[in-house]
Image (cartoon, rainbow, N blue to C red; front, side, top):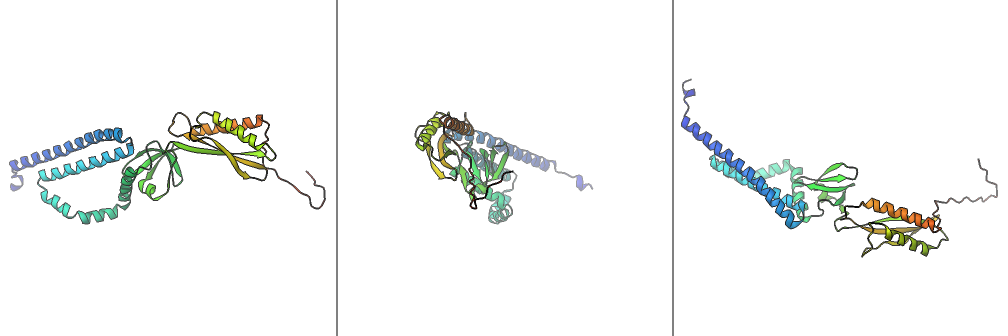
Length: 281
């Protein structure tokens, strides 16, 4: 019992000092990593004009600093042998951890590929496996998009790599189209001229380089279908694409009706081959 309380205060003091120094070093590296990550992220955003890649690189940089911090702490507390053992067993540990956390590792590597390949940027509208929305952020595991109905969807990065991805806004241009059905026997050339003049007048429709166009899409049962196409600037966030399309359709319909064109619905033709009268109820 006497030996139990026979404590070497000098040894205890050394342990406490060493522990305090180790904690101080770890906290110092923690704050240093956060500080440098913020500075690096801001500079990369200004230089690269790509928040996704800038954020990704800054996070990796922060992780490297923290790993260095842990290595220094191990040496301070006298665990150099532990560090050597960890490095020696890194191969086996990496295999075991990689197998156990296969999905997380897969998403992490996919995030690195996405960050450097950059198939989309923050603010782009993408579609992946039927999910369409605006890109908000990307981290080491997933990418966050906001759908048109306001839902925040988190898509694993591996899903973005493995599946076809459509980016609607990456180059700043997006084409919309709609169908107008004319009555057979109409003045088709005049109708196409009226349509083009009206579409050009709509705010948001591009007229330089990528101009609106009209062509015959189909010879339907009751109508001659004209396909109307026009382009919008996806970098212009002040005006909704759907609003532009809606105004274009309404303007075309009103102009054609004013010009005297008939826009019939589907016509069903009844033929009586036996000569009997058709009874109606």
